[in-house]
Length: 329
Image (cartoon, rainbow, N blue to C red; front, top):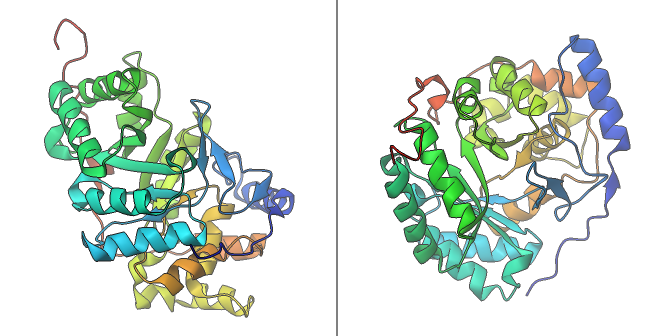
């Protein structure tokens, strides 16, 4: 196994101070940061979730990674480099490759965090139970660390959430969360007496930050960790070369635009799962724990606006509850 990167833990006291200054500049908003940042920052540092469990603060995403060698190699390299968290989904079609790489890594299962997601077609109580069991078979694992509802698109939000609660009760999943949920979707759960998710995974980067502040504030208020996807602008050169990004990057000569954007996400208090299938990029993406962005640099990036056109936006989906009582199930 290749040795992990030598990245000293860096105190986030300064980061918190910078973020507080940014928040004060913006008025009465609660954040940033939008989570309780760990006392020290490293790939193996953890966020404490609202259910009390500890999740590595940095992971690998495998969205659009091809099943087979491409996903297998990316996961294996990432684990060799020191990553301890992998995020996949049933719809990605690569759960089996993730599981194989995890087993072949030789790292004890309990030292790793594996997340996957319930696809839209499997909403509903019985369907969700069956879909999770299928994901476990594909992964070749006895449990999933974090199981997310991929989106609110096909409704039955309370009914499907009840299935995740049941899966956790059975020990098949350890923590449960959602993805692509807006405030109204999460409130549908609490309004019907259900506990809140530990994570809400959404598209989050400087281009969409301003428009999504309401859901960020809600998650912060309710101790729901925001997990960001699209952190590096889906690799789109147009935005990586935007003057806002290049000006901040120029102030940190040894850093790349990708590292600057990931550092922005880290200091904003988001959980990060950047995707790459190249070993040198996986290593580069980890190199964000030993420098700071100033309050002004955070502001410069946070003021960007635009659209990648690479992702969906289920946050606009209407709320559909499905069955809300045991008698209906």
